[in-house]
Length: 176
Image (cartoon, rainbow, N blue to C red):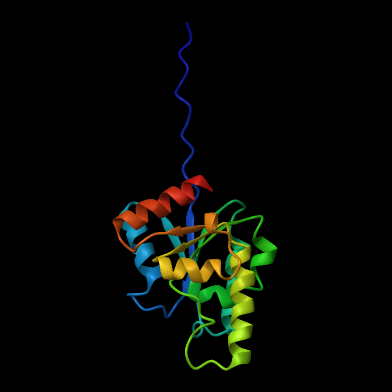
């Protein structure tokens, strides 16, 4: 009789998060990432330079480099504040990486934007969100705003920035 060793358990893919470096501590994306860490998720943070949510050439270059270096199949959390700087990189990597966005609110509706600025932001957000596997939002208002951009409701996950929300996000990541 030959005793077979138990099958080896493959470690889960490393989780990566891409976010603006200057994101406040109380931002939705940062709080969700801290909740995931508290729940035991291993994570690499890729901080983008420059202002957010404005498009910034240094942040666009940093996003290109960060995404290109990630291994195929890696789950990647994208902070919604960084979507404008990631918009050009996403089409090249949307089939290779498993993108999930943490969106606290759409930025094309920010006060003080001209009609042209709002239209550009709307188009960038709409295009970026269309390439993501899931969009995680904190509330029903944001769910409605994301769906108004043409995102199918079954791709939107509501999760508060607390332990329950982190558990819901972990389930989303496990199902990718």
